[in-house]
Amino acid sequence: MIGIGGQPLFILPFGDIVLYFTPFTLTLFIFALVFTVLVIISKPERQIDIVFGGDAYLAKEISISDMKFRRFMAIACGLASMGAMVTGDIFDFALFTSLVGICNVGIVAAVKSRHVQNAAYQYGLVAMSATVPLFAGAAIVAATTGTLSILQLALPGATKVPLLVKALLTLGVMGEGMAPFYAAKAEMFRAPGAPYVIMCSLSSLLIFLRVIEVVLTV
Amino acid sequence: MWNEYSVGLALVMISAVIGFLALLREQDDLHRLLIIDLVEIPSLAIIALLGTDLAEALILPGLVVGIAELLALSQIYVTKEGLRKRPVRGLHIEVVEHAHAPVIIPALLVGYGIVLSGFTGGAVAALGAIFFVMSRGSTDSYELVEMASGIAWAAWIASFFVFMFFPQYWYAGVMGAAVGILVKVAAKMTLVGSMWGEAE
Amino acid sequence: MIISRISRFISNFDNLLALFAGACAVLAVLFVLFLPLPYSEDQLYPKEIDESSPLYPYERGGTPFERADIHVQYPENSPFAGYVTAYLTPFSLALSRLTPHAGTTIVAHPGGILDEILYNTRGLDTVVETTILFIAFAIGSYLFRKGS
Image (cartoon, rainbow over all chains, first blue to last red; front, side):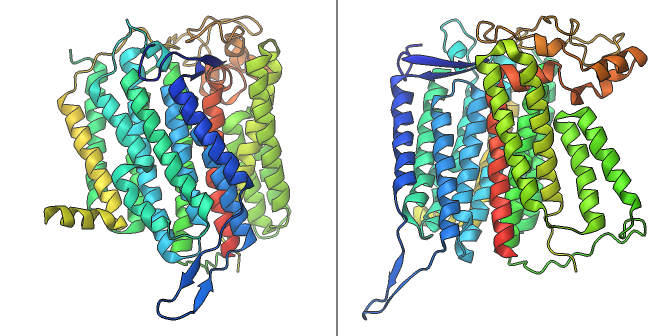
């Protein structure tokens, strides 16, 4: 298991699903953990629109219950990314990734602006259709190699996963929140409430880094 | 080398291509949602092609993820389109209207659900509860149902930890998980089934 | 010129889903072209069909409170794997003695190979799955309450 991630520092077994912490995944895990703590303790900021050429400005009012809901979603998103960082099972990784996707939708879905809600809906549709390549990829890994455990697949003598299956997994993770699909998120950033919205892009970045490690290891 | 698995995979992939092409052409938001629900069936079929007991256990999470996202997205769609007023009339079946007789049907369904337990039992019991809500039109005790759902979830997690750390008490674990899932699924489905707006 | 046209297409989020669906369709076509894939014979939790059993098609091997023989990934991590598989509730035990078709409802009763996988050996999967349901339900009910 001398892959891109390095030797596992320690292993946390839950039956067939084994969580492992390599220097790579541990770094990402700590990153997600720190950001989740920041989300828990930080106060939301208000968005202020300033009129150019005058001194008029108006602050957007956001109700407390909206903020509570979005903080809850952001914390759940942080926990989901932590799980996705350290899980050692491909199907479990697919599940954690789709949890990240639906949390991202939830963070912005509470915003009242119709424009933002339309973006959230389109993004949710992509996230939902991304479960197809994601779960299909995981199931084909199990069928062609006979195992789902990344630690088993990384052993030198293990059957290699076909390239197109890796492409399926990567495409699924991209759909759950990355790269060209970032366009919709730029619309989401107009949503007020700073620390929670940043959680969307952070979690997307983390799952994308992690799927590269998975694809290069198996 | 064309084994049965590859033939099946080819068929499923072709149907997935058809679904995705439909998604490519569709412009209407609601129809997109419906087509995605259709496209998810090939992914379940690919899991099923595994053909082992593991496949059956993997289909359940796959199915639940699809249903959950469909639930959330359809609610976002309703909010986005501003479909506020959704007047729904209660069921106008003569037996259902405020009679005492239908109580027996929910009671039977809930009882049978408890005998079955697990996911299926939860669904059957929820059917009974929805029928009760429909016939009575009462929406007062929703907080109670939500609380029951939360407690059941906690019981479920507790039995997961029993399995992981005290495997010798597996019997307590399996019973806790079965009851937890029964109550959780029943509560969730009851709420979803009655989440349709105010009756006229 | 062409780049600005592409970026204009991508920046409109109404086209996002079409783009993703196109990518999926292309990948699926490629997949069919590269197809014959090997099927590994050494599978976890293999399925054995015994049509004479009253629990067909969910015959699990073993009697209640004994260990059934199942093929898990890490046997050392689940020392008690196999007990849940063999367990039958008293009700389903009686049913399996009365009728040869108990297998049609057996998945709904506690015990059996599916419960073994879902609760015990791959329990974390089910934890995540119920969490997804919980989050989706939270979104749905929050929006519903806000609307009404």
